[in-house]
Image (cartoon, rainbow, N blue to C red; front, side, top):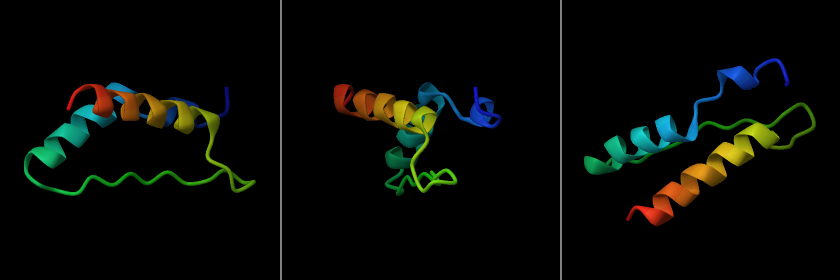
Length: 59
C-alpha cells in the first residue's frame, strides 16, 4: 500500500459530508490531486466511485 493511502477518507465519511453541505444549499468540493505521473490514484478513484454510487442510489 502506498505511503499516504491510509490518509484517505472512507466513502461513508465523504458522503456524510456531502449530505451536510447540500442540505444547506452549499457547494461540495473535493480536492483530489494527481500522483507524480499526473494520474488520479487508484485508491481515490475507488472511493469517489463509491461516493458517486451512494449519491445516485440515495436521491
